[in-house]
Amino acid sequence: MPRTTTVVIGAGHCGLAISRCLAERSIDHVVLERGEVANSWRTQRWDSFRLLTPNWMTRLPGFSYAGDDPGGYQTAPELVRLIGEYAKTTGAPVRANTTVESVSPQENGFLVRTDQDVWEARTVVIASGAHNLPRLPPVAEALPDGLFALSALDYRAPGQLPDGGVLVVGASSSGIQIAHEVHRSGRPVTLAVGEHVRMPRTYRGRDILWWMDASGVFDERYDEVPDLVRARNLPSMQLTGSAATLDLATLSRLGVRLAGKLAGVRDGRAQFSGSLPNVCALADLKLGRLLDTFDAWAADTGFTDCGPVARFPATTLPEKPPLTVDLGEIRSVVWATGFRPDLSWLDVPVLDRKGRITHDGGVTTWPGLYLIGMPFLRRRRSSLIDGAAADARDLTAHLAGHLA
Amino acid sequence: MTTTDLPVDNGVNVEALLGARAALGESPDIAKFTWRTVNSWVKGTHSQSTVETFYGLGDEQQHKSTFSFEADHPEVFAAEDNGITPVEFVLVALGSCLTAGVAAVAQQRQIQLHSVKATIEADFDIHGILGADPDVRNGFSDVRVSYDIEADASREDIQALVAQSQKRSAVYDILTNPTSVTVEVA
Image 1 (cartoon, rainbow over the protein chains, first blue to last red):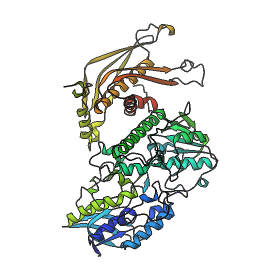
Image 2 (image 1 turned 180 degrees about the vertical axis):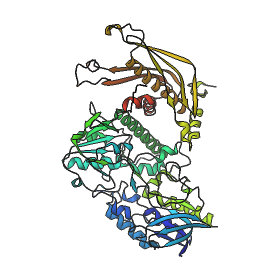
Image 3 (image 1 turned 45 degrees about the horizontal axis):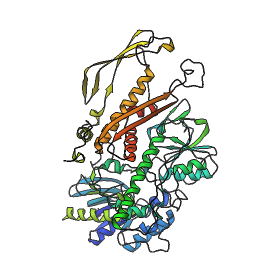
Image 4 (image 1 turned 120 degrees about the vertical axis):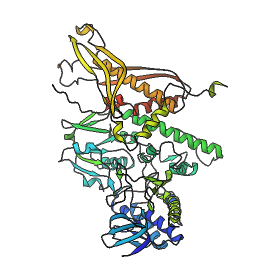
């Protein structure tokens, strides 16, 4: 039976970042990957997908972007090449096409069964991603069986959808982008909008994520935020990987029909929550507070290399958003309601009643088992590729301490 | 000591509420509540509801006293007006739920309230309940709430209080989202 000190599960940016940090400490390890390096970026992104973070933010341990378009946004194939190069230059010991079937505790560590072999390891790092499966709301089961439905993970392009009305459920990053391009394909789109995080692409002439990076918002720590449950469950920012802002007012102006959160199905009609004005008010107010923190940071630090202070108008909504829509008008549904990790292979008793791993900043309650690549794992930045470096360093340090 | 040094006190025990949320943690069953009222017909459209007990925290609970409410229809409906209409109780419920939320959120955000007044209105077309027009629903077509709040806070912070209160309001959720209702004859 092959033995190693650490098994890393998943060769995406997080697994490779961990691998690089383990190598720096000469900790013997393997990286098990069900497909190829950067698998989900290869197989689970729509055709027009671009990263929401500008190129200069694509940083990994020992790597930073050196191309000629630091402000641009990469396509998925470009990112796959970049992560592939990173795996090569770091010499990560990746075992591709090796699917982990179970991880269970045993004396002095873990037993890791794959479809190829069985490993013994003293420590395991779960880097298999936060977005393996769609997270569908219970109302999904109430939709008629014949209605064509798919999730943002399986969505590729509007041509997949039948002609006719499309209901896009969820107005975070995926939902607004899918609603936009499906609308441009000529299909009438209804967008169901729940709680969301409104975000302009640029502010005072700079990328909004530049402000978060510079002002320290991304460095807020998990053990310092007032409400970690909320911080970890925040919907993704309403951003697209392009220079233009795409917000609800824009979508509405283009002709996308905005409705409240999809709440139920009754008598052949989809029912939408009457809370749309309030979720928009909440998002507008929250955006205002975020911009206040940027302005305060700029004033405090004397930063002036940017445009003037500005505020965005409150989200304008149609007079009477629909409370019900005849499902006869809807030919397909795209679920953009978020994702969840697939941990069905994990046989270590660390899951809470909702199937989530119990952990303290990635250090799970089972000694020797670590988790990386989850939203706000250790800091706000953890949700981004750019968060992997610091998290990997912290967790590798803890892991080394566990081994010592 | 200046007034700004006075601790914010809106009469809400936020520590107890936050403590409850922490205590729920991994024992979600104690979070399950059942509310109940008993409604008895008096005469005509007049009925009386009493509220005395509810279930929560894993046990039967009791209000400090039995509360009683009269409901009727007004004289313009050829009734005796012994109490407010059932739909007005819905407005009462919405207003009191949102205002309780405003106070609780203000306490947590350390905002001292001086006065909070809400006017709650709902539009309603009686063609619906009379069965006179199948295109008109029985219930409200529109509900509007207008808050007049004096507090030691900016207008934006007050708007945020009201928005957060809606987000966490049970009655607001009950009104804005469909709810399964079963009515049976015992």
